[in-house]
Amino acid sequence: MEYGLLGETLGHSFSPQIHRALAGYDYQLLPTPREAVEPLFRRRDFRGLNVTIPYKALALALCDEVSEEAKAIGAVNTVVNRGGRLFGYNTDFGGFRLLVRHRGVSLAGKTVLILGTGATQCTVRAVCTAEGAAQVLCASRSAKPGALRYEQAAARQDVNVIINASPAGMYPNNGIC
Image 1 (cartoon, one colour):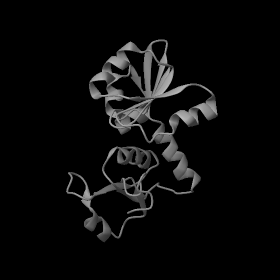
Image 2 (cartoon, helix red, strand yellow):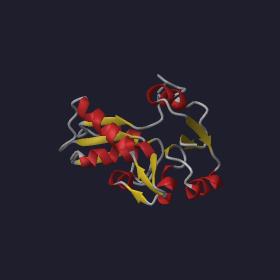
Image 3 (cartoon, helix red, strand yellow):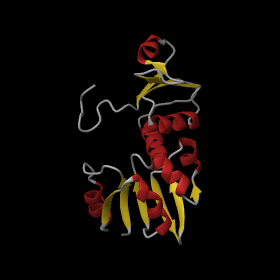
Image 4 (tube, one colour):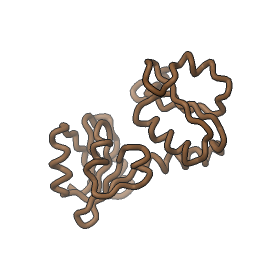
């Protein structure tokens, strides 16, 4: 196998069709149990992997070198094998930063409220910090350390930008909040 998507549950992924259509190479889904992830990385019998839930933090620990963005987020979603050395990246950082800039949203000096406290929040927080946000707040349905409850967040009058990093509206529940 040269390229693939590593994760736990992958039945909903269109990645093989997208990679075949855009790049013309074989791309496989690798639904993998936790105990098989480290041996896969040790074998290094792939050229590149995309990594998804729940193995992004584990992938960070298993790579030989990791980009600064991936370190800031605490997760790797892309692994490239160069001559037997594994390089880890987080392409979500660049993707989200590009989206913010493309839409003309300035985060510099702003108070940003992120809805959600999961892995996506880590990416959004890293981009907000890199773009110079004055303050980054997070809101959660349940009381989590360092996060506001949604009721507390709704009362904040100083928030300039709100970013949804929660699963609300995510496939297969598109349009549901």
